Length: 151
Image 1 (cartoon, rainbow, N blue to C red):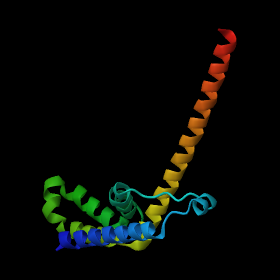
Image 2: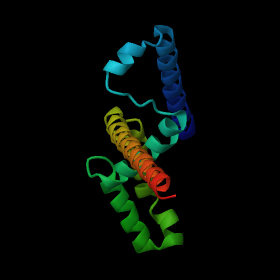
Image 3: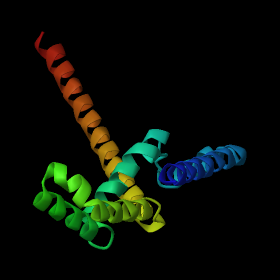
């Protein structure tokens, strides 16, 4: 039952993403409008389906308002019972943690928060890359000018 719920949610997410993509294709590309608006980063399918999902899982485990308490209870039980014994004796804590993680995985607030964090990190990386390229171009120009004058 868990797998079918996850696959249904993933299919829903994919169909929503495909409908967003098709609606943007229908509207057409307006170059002047794109230049006036701040650049929007388009998320790749791998980013949406893998990287952001990983961020959601990690954030759900780490933050108290999501699944931290269930994670802590499960971890404490497994440490007390040992690795092998914890598999059977901590079944309820494990089940509670999995249910919480399922809930958090489809929580739109958490997903949107993780998406914003990812987009911000991506923007910063793009800006840093642009700055690095500009520095490299300047260095190459300085080296080229020096070589012309000294050779």
